[in-house]
Structures are given as structure tokens and as C-alpha cells.
Image (cartoon, rainbow, N blue to C red):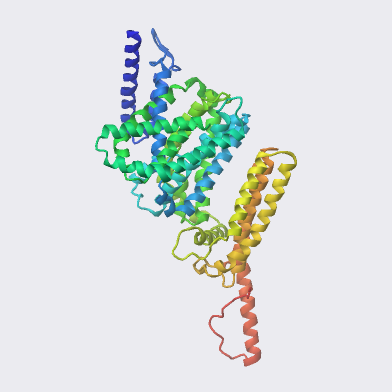
Length: 594
């Protein structure tokens, strides 16, 4: 017994010291400590084996179970602090653009993750966790890079922080539902049980936030002993995790929600100061233990998945999300910075891989760990490069893109920017009918994806009908807004408000149609969604060309129309006043569209 205890102490002490050395080297080369911890875990883990001459090495740590148990504590504390960062004040400040971009970012990356999983021939449960690993961005690397570049004072940084908070919240909700559905192996468990458990779980924390915690905080503020304070908070965190398990959801969700409950209270700063050292130490153990679960021999079996995931993440974030950020209303440099900042993957991806390893229904758990580790390594290394080059890429695109795309995107950007960004004067207020229509659309998409037979078709038809109604409502409600927006410095011709309104409404409505078709075809022929998405992009570019041709003063069509108008104007003057009448230097060209 004594030899086992001493061996355990030796292994634990070696883990801490080697992790320290790895983190110190990572900081020296300005890399994330998470990468160092994972590599250390691989090196000292039970799967590492090599032989040089008479020397044979088969790992340093044998008792992985003990380390994994300690790692669970670190993960709970890590998620607790994520909940503490869920500041409602920050969300209110950037709520519109941050919420929109966060939802699109998570949805887009989940989508490409499912595409990759199905391309690899994986089952649905395995696909869910692979998609989650790909979808969860990491902010630590991005914020460190922005700090080094002196860009923390840029306006887009606040929105990046808001997006991070929103994505953390979305990831927890996803884990709540997925965890409840696939982790629970009780024979009596069903969706109704999950729904009741989640309702009870949320009600419990609402009661805590409204009635209990405000009174508890008063006593904590008066508590002078740091020892008692830390013991109380640790007990609350772990009991909240245990309550989550009782309700049928993963324990991480309990830690996250209790962090949300204590966010922005008077004791928040004290928590961060006193508990952060424990969090950092146990979090390091968690990442090291994750590395121990990775079998280096598996990398040769998953290199296709790793390469595909890296390319899809770069495409989704740097290209698609940068474009979406620009169309929503950010300037070109801020847009590329936002897309680049979300290329990194880290603790959240590893968290999902760790959860997947505990799920009996996941058959690819052995593959998910090396995939998550490799994605974290590559994307956390590439993220700083993308951010540093973001301004150059944005300026290059501004020069190289065709004039029709630049004009159409700028018109779309200015229109949505007026609708989305918080301002003292907001020309557009979404009506309750319009918001109800959008919520109905989201509901029909969920039903379309999750049903079969006639329900699948009926939900798809409803989604198409809602998309058509959205177009007519947008045309009616946006026209007055567009008339009040100044597009003159973009080169828009006077009297183009109706065409610009139609362009914006068509692009949005067709986007909804595209989502409907994807939701309908994905369960049937998943490969077809690539064709559908590509067709929408081509059609959007065509809409930009039409908008440029019919509304921009620099287009040949508008110039010809203007020349014809001026010619007709001059002819009428000559008929009335004679050929020597002095013509005005500039006649205003305007087609009455009202």
C-alpha cells in the first residue's frame, strides 16, 4: 500500500513539474499553454511507446483514473468561470450584431462538421460530437494576439467578446440537450423525462438567481475568512454539478449556470482572485489528462479527418464569417479580423471530446480525442497568423474584387448596419408580426430536420411559405428605411430606393429558402446541400450584379438611362425655347418610383 501511495505521489508530482516545463516553453515561444499541456499528456501517457537500443519507454503515468478524476474538478471550475464571464451588461452593449454573428457562426460550423462526419461515413451520434468539436471557437488565443497587436481598443473587439460570451452560452445549451439525450443510459429515460428534468433545472437556478443568491451575497460580502469563502464556493459549484446530473443533464451545465448566477455580484472579483489559482492548476491537469487519452498511433488513421476539419474551419471562419460580418455592417478590416479571431479551437473542443469519451453510444471516441487535440494545435497556431494578416487581406479584397460585388456588398452592409447596430436613432423597429414570423421559421426548420414522411414535407412547405411572406413584409417595411439612408458616396443613383429595397429583401428571403432546402434535403441526400449552398452564393452574386447595373451611377445601364433622360430634357427645352437657350449644367436624373 505504501509503495502504491508513493508511486502515485511520484506520478502526480512528475505531471505537475513536466506540465510546468511545457507551459514555460510555450510562453517563451508565445504559444498557448493548452497546446503544451496536451503534448505533455501524450508524452507521459500510457499510449506513448518507443524503444532506442536497450532503452524502452512506455509512458510515465499508469494510474490515469486518478488523474482523470482530478481533471473533472478542473473542468468544472473552468466552466464555472466561463459562467462568471456571462455579463448581461456586455451582452446588452453589443447584443444585436454579437447575437446574430454568434448564432450564424455556431450554426455554420456545426453544419460543416456534420458534412465532414457524414463524408467520413460516421453515425449520427458520432457526427454530433465531431460537429461540436469543430464548431466551438476559443477566444484565449485571439485575445492574446489582439493584445500583442494593440487592437484591444478597436470597436470590433467588444463585439468579439460579446460573440465569445454568446457562443459559450449556446455551446452549453447544446451540451445540455445532447448530453441529456445521449449520455443518459437509464432504460426508463425518454425525451419527456429530459424535458421535465431541464424545466426543473432551469426553474431551480431562476429561483436561486432571483431569491436566494442576493441574500447569500450579503453574508459573503461580510465574510472575512478567505478559507471559509473558498470552501463555501467550491461546495456550491460541486453541488450544482451534482444537481445537474440528478436532473439528467451533464454536470458541466450545473457549474456553468451557478457561475451565471454569481456573475456581476459584489463577490465576483473576490471569487476570481481566490479561486483562480485552483482553477488554473486543476485546468492544467484536465488538459494533461486529455493528452493522456490520445493514442499517437491513431493520428495516422484520422489525418484525413484532421485535414478536412482544418480546411473547413478556415473556409467557414476566414471566408464565410468574414463576409457575413461585413454584410451585417462591420467595415472590411473589422470583418476579416472577426472571422480570423474565431479560427482558434481550444478548451471547448477538448471538453466535447472528453464528454464523448464517456458516452457508451459514441463508437468513434478513440478518434475524437486525437482529432480534437490536432485541431486545437493547428488552429491555435494559425489563428495569430490570420489575425496579423487580416488588415492586409481586407485591403487586398477591396482592390481585387469586381466592382459589382464591392458595390452590392456595400449597399447591403449599409442597409443592415442601420438595422442591426445599436444607435440612439434607429430607423427600423422589427414588428411583433415580423419577429413571430422569424421564430416560426426557425421552428419549422427544426421540425423539417427532425421529422420524416409527411411531417417532413409539410414543415418544408411551411418554411417556403414563411420565406415568401418574409420577402413581402421586408419590401413593405424596409422601403421607408432605405429612403432615409444616404447611399450617395457609394455611387447610388437618385431614385434607387425601391430597387435597393428589393435587392436586400430578395437576398434575405432567398437565404431563408436556401436554409429550408438544406433542412429538407440533408436527411435525404446530404451531398445535395453543397449544391444548394453553392447555388445560393451564385444567385447572391447575380443579385449584386443586377443591383449594380440598375442603381449605380457608374454602371453602363444607368449612364445610358441618364443620357437618354438628359437628351429628352434638352430636346424638350429646344422645342420650347429654341436652340440657343442656355441649358443647366446638370439636370437631376430621378425616376419617380413612389
